[in-house]
Length: 92
Image (cartoon, rainbow, N blue to C red; front, top):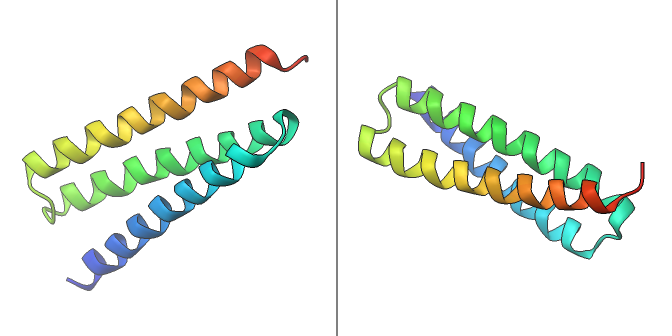
């Protein structure tokens, strides 16, 4: 039972970290922004992984898991689009 609370805390922490990274990136210049966006994408991938573990432990029902997974997937697509846009505008 304790592991569920630890995982829930980790999920909360990752959500806050993602929001923080996106907020920071919104105020950075183009060169600084790309590494921050990449970090937000990595945190999003870890968030997906943690939610899946909680679901596999049966601490999350199928319906709620599907809802959360879709929202996290959508978030990843949006951040990925931001990253792609930055990469296309940044000279190599």
